[in-house]
Amino acid sequence: MTREEINIFYNRYRGRLYNTAYRISGDRMDAEEVMQDAMIKYLKSGMSLELPKEEAWLVKCTVRGAIDRLRKKKRNLEFLEEYKADVKEKTGDVKWRDGADMVPKIKEGMARLPDGYRAVLSMILFEGFDYEEVAQIMDVKESTVRSQYMRGKERLIKIVNEL
Image (cartoon, rainbow, N blue to C red; front, side, top):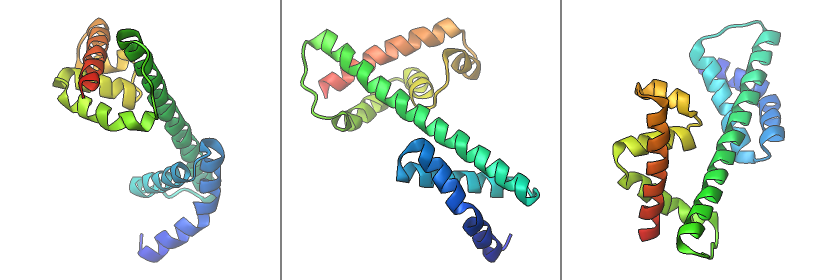
């Protein structure tokens, strides 16, 4: 595809895809990223469908991308809430200014974790895999993944509390 053809393609679908993603996500930046991801995915795949099918495929991809992004945000918020509850349980009442204050500490804590714990926590918390999927990817038992998740989470809490 030439640059001009890509511009025509982009201009043809950007409004529809952006609006679809924005209605689902409620966030302008997320909508922009989801829209661009869908277009890039389509262009990289080399698909050449008829216009109605092309648009349907792009809209479907955009809807799925926006929903996935919402799920990921929800998991991140649930993790922070679970983390706060765990810390409160272990350390007593802690005043939390803002969840964003914890992000650098959690990143640092993740970096300090052993590889196995970091991989399991990343796949479950940030990538959205369940225990069974992680077990298949890592070629271990599901019970191993569950125990690594729990141990990794406890160690992460300990590391973050020390920071």
